[in-house]
Structures are given as C-alpha cells and as structure tokens.
Amino acid sequence: MNILNRLFKIGQSEAHAAVNQFEDPIKMTEQGLRDLRQDLDKSLHGLAEVRAMAIRARNEGESFRTKAADYESKAVLLLQRAHKGDLNATEADRLAGEALLKKAENDAQAARAATDQTKFEHSAAQMDQNVSTLKSTISQWENELRTLKARVTVSTATITINKQLAQLDSSGTVSLLERMKEKIAVQEALAESYGEVAQATKSIDAEIDKALGASGAGKASEELKALKAKLGYAE
Image (cartoon, rainbow, N blue to C red; front, top):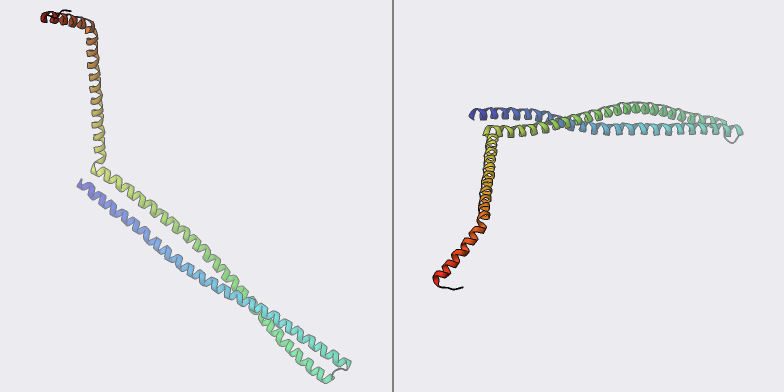
C-alpha cells in the first residue's frame, strides 16, 4: 500500500507539472494578445490620422485649383475690359500679370497638395495592410489560446478521473465491493432456502390435519359423551 501511495504521489506531482507547463503558454499568449490589441488600437488611430491628412490635402488641392481658375478668369476679364476701352491698357496688363502670378502660386500649391495627397494615401494603404495583418494575427492567437485552454481543461479532467480511479484501486474499495456482493448473494440464497423449508413444513402439517380431520372430530365427540355420562349429565 505504501508503495502504491508513493507511486500515486509521484504521478500526481508530474501531472501538476504538466498543467503548470500549460499555464505559462496561456499567460504568455494572453499577454501577447494584449500587446497586439494595443498595437492595433495605435495603428487604427494612426490610420485615421493619415487618412484625415489625405482628405485635407485633397480639399486643399481643390481649393487651390479653384483659386487658380478664378485668378485666370480675372486676368481674362481685365484684358477684355482694356480691349473694350473700359480700363487703361497699361493698368490692365499690370493687374492681369499680378492675377496670373497668383494663379501660378495657386497652381503650385495645388500641385504640392496633390503630391501630399498621393503620399498620404500611399501611407494609408500600407497602414491598412498592417492593420489587416494585425487583425489576422490576433484572430490566429485567439484560436490558439482557445485550443490551449481546452487542452488544459481536458487534461485537468483526465487527471481528476485518473486520480479517483487510482485512489479506488489503492484503497481496496473495488475488492470490498466485490466481497459485499458475494456476502449479499449468500444471504439472499439463505433467505430463499429458509422460505422453501418453511413452506414445505407448512404444507406437510396441512396435509396431516386434513387427513386426520374427520376421525379426529368423531373421536372428540365420543370423548365428550363419555365425559357427560361420567358426570351424570343426561342428554
């Protein structure tokens, strides 16, 4: 029995060690998932900011192009008025030249905004790809974590069942149950045997009483008459 207990304790310690080996990967995976989710939040925030800059660059480019077109229209209008004589030609040329300079400045700003928009959109596309990779990695790790936890649950349940079985065998409970079953079977057989004997005895007594019933009653009647005659009781 002592040897069995020692063997059981050794197996129990090994089982606990196996469970502990599962716990570390679970904790590491959970921490890794927390880190990845933080990275994902940062990436989503950065992606939103870069997309906002791309939108702003696009809006600025449209605004600069609108202003450039407006300055060009003003230069044309100045020249048309000078041609009609409504405005001094020299003054019209000067103002038209200034308008064209403004147009060129706005064209340059529009080109810069377009370059910025392209750059920001490219960065946003790269960040979006990184976000997708992070999401896929997180999903994969979550599946692995569920698998690890399921394995721990199964192994823990198996350890518990095996422990109970080991305790039953080592304590001799199974043998005790078998002995109890055998004893009960003997008692049941003995009870059945006594019942059969009692029934057989009762049957024989009944047969005897039945066989002697008539003659016994007649003899009792004769003895009663003789007793009355002895006492002087006339019928």
